[in-house]
Image (cartoon, rainbow over all chains, first blue to last red; front, side, top):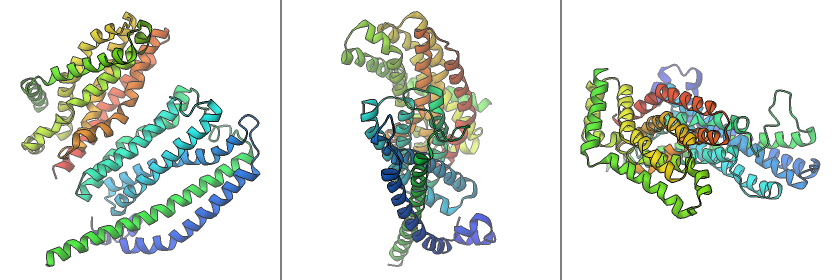
Amino acid sequence: MTQAAAQRRGGGGWHRFANPARFRRIAGAVAPWASGLAVALLLLGLALGFFVAPADYQQGETVRIMFVHVPSAWMALFCYTALAAASAASLIWKHPLADVAARAMAPIGAVFTAQALITGALWGQPMWGTWWVWDARLTSVLVLLFLYLGYMALWQAIEDPAKAAKACAILAIVGFVNVPIIKFSVDWWNTLHQPASVLTTEGPKIHASMLWPLLVMAAGFKAYFVAVLLLRMRTELDGARLRALESRLAAAE
Amino acid sequence: MGGFWTIVARDLLLARRQGAATLLVVVFFAMTVTLFPLGIGPERVVLARIASGVVWVAALLATLIALDRMFQADHEDGTLEQLLLAGPALELVVLAKALAHWLSSGLPLILAAPVMALSLHMDARGLLVLLAAMGLGTPILSLVGAIGAALTVGLRRGGVLITLLVLPLYLPVLIFGVGGTEAAILDTSIRPHLLLLGAGLLGAIALTPWAAAAALRLALE
């Protein structure tokens, strides 16, 4: 799908954003706001988490790790969902920016997943007395990390970017069956890891003084995700443009 | 459907004539299982405890061996393109290839599994459940493996990549497969584990050919 083809469709709906120049303009306008918002929210969230939220009566000060751990785990799942959605958009509508977005999202998601695992280990050592337990949920987050790594490896293994994009899109959608298994694995296997306590049908089970820092951090991570995603997508588009110019130059010589 | 069985028969013939591919898979399986008593020690109780897990892990790895050849040889000599042009729907080709892969690697593993499980002191009830679970689970491995094989067809280092792509997707099979035998040992209901594996198999039959066929079309563009 080329820029011209996107314009032939009248530029309606999502294809309005398929034009790289227009995307670049919008991204350029949004990115500073997203970055600023991310910094502000993360600072506020950390301040709330460190100084306002009380220490837990069972977990003590260690509970503060949760303000990074839980939003990271949410982001790990969110990024993979977004990755699969972008992949589906790329396969179904052949949206050119969806490929770029999917490719740009994968490393961000991988980092959040790694962060969830590392902070989880740091929390587990004082709480459970061990860095790692082979509990279903921990294991499935580890598997999620492997899914991200496999996705990125496949992208690097295929030379033709258009083919790589499609193959990776198929892989992302196939891997997506794993995401609900992760979410509901707590209920299925219900082992050491505590069951979900924020999104339950009876409403949040944790106190507001702890819920707020959590939500602010989560919003901060989301803003960070948007800022970094836009940056990576712009870099990706610049790279594609550079490659096109180089090949044109090579052809002219 | 005529073309379907032709492909199955052809792949089986190729597997038989291309130098004992099936034997290789079974020997790899037996060797892997043998490593565990050597690594862990010969205590009867310990081995009986880990038997089902060891057999499943070895089976998982053994099915990977023949996976990278599922489409690779046909891609290299152009057969795959002919199949795309003149054969049955590519989804059926994938199903046929996965069935042939299962018949030449999954089924022999199920036949070899009792010997290996008994050598690890698994009891009779656990063994029956293990075989039932493997009967339902190993076809899933072939079907899901077909996606990995189709995605990496034509890549230079596809074999290594398949492992990274496919093993995470194999995990639910391992969990429910081992869960069934565990339940038999602990004398709880084995039904949910086998039902989940059966559901997984039906889902895999219905869905994986689409993904693998899409990946193949991409490779043949």
